[in-house]
Structure formats: C-alpha cells, structure tokens
Image 1 (cartoon, rainbow, N blue to C red):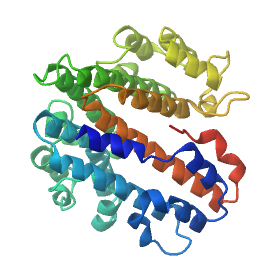
Image 2 (image 1 turned 90 degrees about the vertical axis):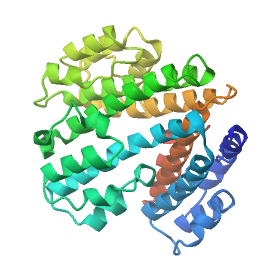
Image 3 (image 1 turned 180 degrees about the vertical axis):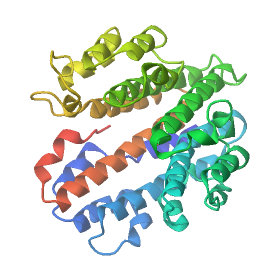
Image 4 (image 1 turned 30 degrees about the vertical axis):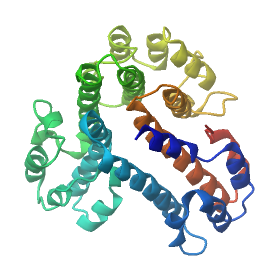
Length: 352
C-alpha cells in the first residue's frame, strides 16, 4: 500500500509541467497539457471547458485513487482513512444545513457536496423538512454523530451559527483524530503518530488563528471563541489562551510570536506592523501572499516531509493534501488564463 501511495506522489505535476501550463493560451491548451497526468478523466470534457468543470474532473481522479486505496486498506489504515473523510463530511453537512435553511433543491445540494465526504445515508438528510428533523438525522445516520452529541443542539442549527457549528465539529474531529493516532495500539509511538501529530497540530493552530481573526467585528464573544479552539497544537494551551483574549491583530501576533513558523508568516504578510488591519490578511505593503497562502505553503512543506518517513499512514494524508494543492494550482492557472490575466499566475503557485 505504501508503494502505491508513493507512486501516486511521483505522478504529481513537476515544475516543468507548471512551466508548460503557464504558457497556455486557452483552457483547451491546459487540458492538453494535463492529458498525460489526468488522461481519461478529462476526455469527457467539452471543447474549451469551464474552470469549474476542469476542477471537478481533476478532483474525480483524486477521489478514484483514494477510493482504490480505501478499498484495499485493512486494520488501523482502514480506520485512519475513514478519519480522513470526516473533514469533508463536516463541510457537506454544513452545506446541507445551509441548504435546508434556504429551502434549496436537494439535487443541487448533493451535487455540490465533496465526493470524499459522501456517506451512504447522506441523501436521507435532504429529506428533512425542517432543522430539527435534519439534526436528528445527523445524530442517527452519519459518522459525525459523536461530534454533535454534547456540543450542539437543534436550536444551534441556524444561519447565524453555521460557522460556529462547522468549527465546533472540526474541533471535536481534530481532537478525536489526534487521540486516535496517539492511542491506537498499532499507531502509538510509531512514525504515523509522529507525522500525524505534527500535521494535526498545525491544522489546529491554523484554525485557531483564523477563528480569532475572523471573529473580530462580529458578535462572537471571547468565551464563545475560546470554545472553538482545538485542545491540541503548538499554541495550546498558553497561545490559545492569549488568542482568546486578543482584541485585534496585534493581540494575535503576540499570541503566535513564540512559534517561529507563525511569526515568520505574520512578518511576511505585514501583519506584524503597527496599525495593521484585517485588510492586511491579503498581504501587507509589498507582500505577494496572504496569510492563508502561507498556511497552504507550510502545509505543503509538512506534507512533503511526511514522505521521508517509512511505514507511516501519514503519507496517505500528505498525498491527499499535495493533490488538493495541485488541483488548486490548476484551477488558479485556468482562471487566470480564462480572464486573460496570466501575469497573476506565478505568485500563488505552490510547487512540490
């Protein structure tokens, strides 16, 4: 299984592939350049397809390869791959909750759900005619039931709370996943536990930082905000406490200052400067990348390093993240070409 995943990793686009893509003039040119890597997955696309259609087909390849691995996984790896799908399930359930609130068409909602977050009983959720029915269905019919119990009630499922719901579920999920890789008898003390601990701690910190920054100017209280922070990560517990007390970006900067990686990110986006505002999230004076771009870059670095370890389930997680970044790269290049803005391509491509 490890050999298959490493083979998938070796099929990722190279710097030369990206150079060729940046020379394309049309989406058809992009499609042609991607043919060796994506083959049959692009064959059904019409001439000059939309960027969303191209993204969907490249995602289909990721899903097909993931499902093949999952079908052949046994033991702790099988459970590990189930955990990988839970994050996508959370996003899908949040989408269904939003759709139910707005009385959206069921078929439209299901088509927008991420295929890696699909579960057999998901169409049942769309049968719900009100939020209470949906809540009860989630508790009974989905693998996320444990993340709802004790944390959320059906009264919480309203439009104003949708991001709180999503972040609460992610908090519970990350803590559970972290406990799994560190306590399962087959994984505790192994390279898998080491690799995944680093990955999950980074993800927990990223979410805590983003939750804090996005809460400024909203009705979310500091006490409510603190409840959304995962109880894992390099920032936990001291940095998390400082984040919970932050009133502005300067407070966030102080909270993360002790972690060199995060301090560097803030420095490079101009968020360390006196008078910085949330608008600097897109980059400070002279900055080319946003804070989120730097988070993605760090995620890619961690994912690449995962492949230096032997016999670790973490390479499956790392491969998925690398593949997702590749799809984001392809989508970004395609959108720039479609909008005749090729000069924007270079700054936002993460090559690995």
